[in-house]
Image (cartoon, rainbow, N blue to C red):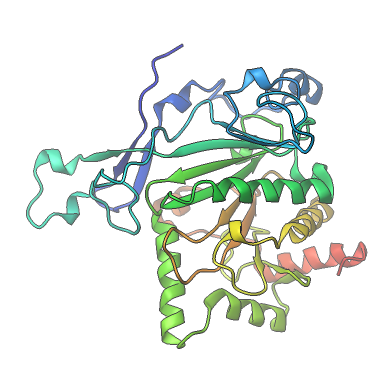
Length: 357
């Protein structure tokens, strides 16, 4: 097996944005091969995430076994293991100057110094410490979350919350689901990935700052809570609403049929809530209704960074229907050819046809 290289965090000198260099992930089978569909029967026969093949993964760190039983054995409903090709490695250490950075700045950033940086300082880096887990959503081989059914989706969401809560010492915990090769999935069996980061990503830090600024400017109101009230009132981008959560296409959607799910009243942390699983099922069924099957997609959970007082968790879901080209990659500005109002109307229509409006 090739020698594993420790991941590290680097900061672009011009933009200030972080990248994680994780050379070990290049050792994944077919890491640079064009996406190709694997016959379902073949994938199921070799899948390391299926029940009964626990010896093909790293030793589990957590599992839900209602009937009890030893680790790394059958009988689980959801199971979490370290990623075999981690983007993060090593324990968080509060003594390190770059550990658990809570905002946009970093000890490794050459622009934080008070004087002209030396050549060495211009190329500073920091260890990419933290945890990178895989959370297997079900013991049976299922390719998509929607194939788990409403109860299976609810159990998966509960497992995600359990694992996020287990990393409360991280600066930020990012949980994702990739479905399909275009979305970056290398294994078909439905699973989530969790990254317990030693820093707050710039995108999350900016969102946190906007939540805080709005709260202060309005003398106590909450940004996403007010936004939800308006989206429900206007209904232009609203897809569905129930007693727990709301589903809508964001005003500035970056790509066609982008969806945002949020609890109707403010809760900072996804892991401290129990709402939203039923609405996630609704979101997947709506996409299935429009496209005939759920498209390949990326999903991520936005929960409050460590120590944040003003936040409102939400879940974002982005179908992979468009490709970013030179304009989007070079400017960071996305061009969306399908307005969110039109997408929401399409999604509402299929839910109405199914009696879920």
